[in-house]
Image (cartoon, rainbow, N blue to C red; front, top):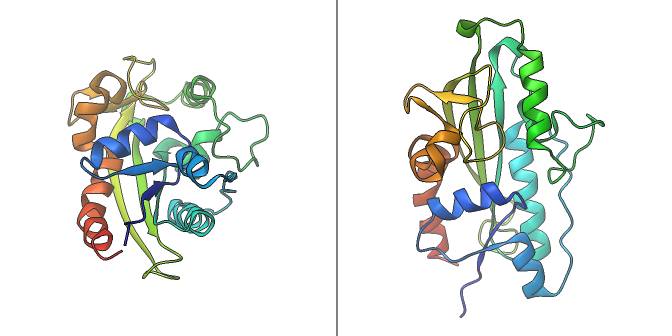
Length: 217
């Protein structure tokens, strides 16, 4: 029996690169690659849950359902303490002219960073604490998991700077300073960032569960 491929349930190129870096040796498909292979359209998942875990589970289940493959989804974002945890689940569309938009593919990193800097303009450095949070969800609707979903979570603590630094990464990486790295995520780049990032920590928890599951399908 030919093993069904694993699909990453994201169209975010930055996340796709990171997730592939974190899963060396595992053959995976992006949503668009899976769509091309299957000869069908895979629509964007409506991310309307109010938690990262809710959105990750929904994305994984819907992509697994439409492809028939195991699907791994990530939902992640930035939580700024001075903003009551915002932008949170709205991180990708924080600066959207339609804040209620639920299209995870519709985002503008530069606009999001500009809005965040404006929101924190009067906040002193010692009050600009924040964290990145990532939830990974593995679903296989047509496989042994059925209605069950495997989830893991990872966080990374940091501080939001008053100006961007670095040209690597994506999203809020130029503004997010990691005391552990003594660099912003944009300065660190994917290789270094992959050791300590929220997504790396979520993947370290997911990887053994994922590998064990893929051996059975």
